[in-house]
Length: 198
Image (cartoon, rainbow, N blue to C red):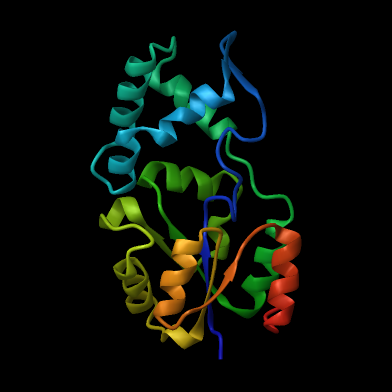
């Protein structure tokens, strides 16, 4: 019997940052979304996700490397503006919240994970939140899932994992956690109905 719903965050709860507009402007300075988003493909980002770099450090290094006319504070403001909830996901979270305990399993630096929980007002749905930047391990490492199971005191068969990355889905399944591959909120509702979850 399913007691816990374990949800990935990136591209499940929120769209990829900076993906909803082509340009972002602050203090009369305009930047292409693709240029701002490049931080997520930098070597420093891998360290940030594992808690090895602080927010100001990764941004400072990125702005210096790209020679952008931005302060760290301005970049953070643009980042926050680039965070948007998946259309239709709030309704699904509200429905799941009424019937199950929800956990957010997040690969992200701590500061940005918190922005992505708080800006769309999703934190209220989660009884447990696990952030890679706080534990130094990220999905698809099996230990990430094992830590989550231990913390929520649940057996794998009592959980359903929802994620958009097949590597994470495969690891969850190998641990005995039933899983759904997320593509769109509309498809997720159909898949949850098939599992008699919603």
